[in-house]
Image 1 (cartoon, helix red, strand yellow):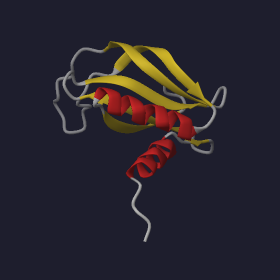
Image 2: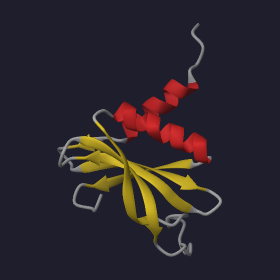
Image 3: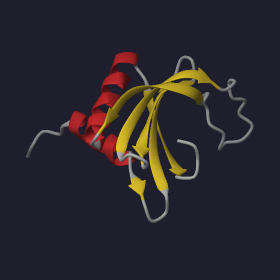
Image 4: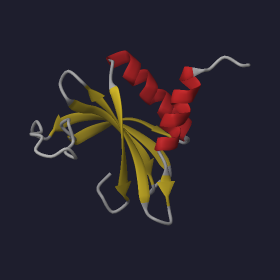
Length: 119
């Protein structure tokens, strides 16, 4: 029986989270969260306009969240960012996300957005 490859498993899971559903206009987005500052530090998604996978580094955030409901986001969302990298295939973006998560000890968060929402 082959040895379980956690890195390959994680990369595939991240890559498949960066999906685009043309029929329903859904876009999968992955955020990397700093648990100490409770802020989104990196975000990635498929860009339907040019067909690439974009990884961005957050540069500004909304105010710290006050959790009033169980469904509230437990971290400050980025409101501005710089391009960290643009990739042709989701696996490259996923490998970048995994490297950033390791380097900065970040946690993942997956969100499904409607294409009409701002990416």
